Length: 312
Ligand SMILES: [Zn+2]
Image 1 (cartoon, rainbow, N blue to C red):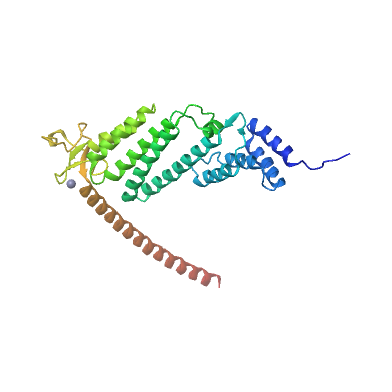
Image 2: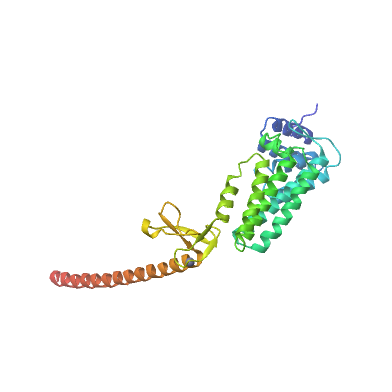
């Protein structure tokens, strides 16, 4: 009679799959990892399942995608099932490599935006566009296994991702251009809005940027005309009496007379000067406080001396 105190690899594998179909992925991962360890790492399907589970909540992590890609390449042509989802290995490989590259490029876009690296923004925008086309070509109306597994999403297609990436690409191009040419940036935003709307989004953020990038104002202080609100000129609160508001042509104040337009140069000069003045006041106040503190300290020690005399 054979006793088995320890579960063998196959049994663990079955248990892992049972947990997957109940949606208990992290428990399943532990069991599947044990089954891999038992069988010395030859249970390749389990390795793929572990790599899939590791992508949960990590769809922005390129490294996790390459782990899955390696596992898929190592498993040969056995049938692959994850819970109820039947997976075609070749299609999963395509999905995995495209989503992995998307994660990489989106990371790069965010870094370029953070460091305001304009040359890099333009480069990434180009690469996003060719990646978008690959989603369209290779997945088209197909949905994503990983979205189905993690989000129960069975409607997002390769074409949806194509639209989304095209929108991000044009928004990135717009960011890279707005500094030198706001009207061209407004055109890029308009194109991005078109892609967002194809995906059923309103595109209102793009529309707001189109409006401000295309808006022209005359600086109340120096009279220069600037296009691109929030970039090349600002709307700043001010008290404009009706008698002052006699603009003809390009406006230097919005209709409500509660603010004026100031070009970036004037705005930065005024705010730098205001900062300097504030700093001077701050330093003056601090040195007065220090002088007062010293006077009080001197009085305290004089009092202490008197007290010790009285005690003595
Ligand atoms: Zn100005």
